[in-house]
Length: 250
Ligand code: G
Ligand code: G
Ligand code: MN
Ligand code: NA
Image (cartoon, rainbow, N blue to C red; front, side, top):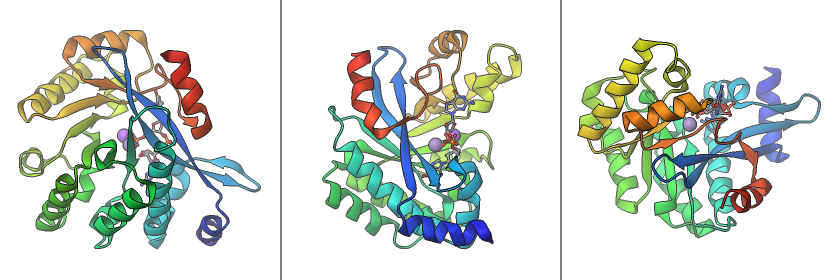
């Protein structure tokens, strides 16, 4: 209850901030975009991660206004970057299903001037399970604008292979859980191999998340994964560090 009240206040007091984690193309090594990750700059408790407050915000419905702030802020900040890279924004299932989503996306793009092609929305499998026709319509509306959609945490949810065929998606993000055990566990290798070949067959890109070691990078490259994201490349960084980071790696 306390957290819930504080959340409402935090939005008004602008206590949220976005960090950005780079995504790297495996064949060329170039950074192609950043994922926006929200943090709460709490007056007493310091920086709080989304794992603590996103579930609360989802329960109370506050996720719609918080999520809208994230969307606008991510689009705004991305226009300040020195290169026209892509920005990926996480959407909760509640946000994805909300009737105002398309309008809010249009507003965020219009206000920031970010070209739709530079915006990628990350949804989870739970966003697609309830209202299939509604989800299909939302995805078509996003796609018709040129906005990309990635399936986040792939392999951990209620994966139904039928969704992948039915819904117009652009990318699968292979959950860090599988990536972490790649070098030690043959089952994880089999799962990652299967996800990549499935994605290929359906013309979807793949991004492996949570990559931490050079061994994982070599294996993912050999398996034909398109992109990687994780501490090995860089930790999520404040927006002000994006430009210096790009200068350093170019
Ligand atoms: O940044 P961190 O690893 O602590 O993120 C933990 C989880 O919070 C991740 O699963 C991520 O998808 C989620 N998350 C981060 N930022 C956002 C956001 O802006 N909106 C939503 N819905 N989830 C987010
Ligand atoms: O579920 P989602 O992909 O949105 O979550 C990304 C989360 O994973 C972020 O909170 C980010 O901070 C965290 N993360 C990113 N890279 C790594 C990594 O290499 N290792 C671990 N353990 N966590 C990571
Ligand atoms: Mn994500
Ligand atoms: Na994820």
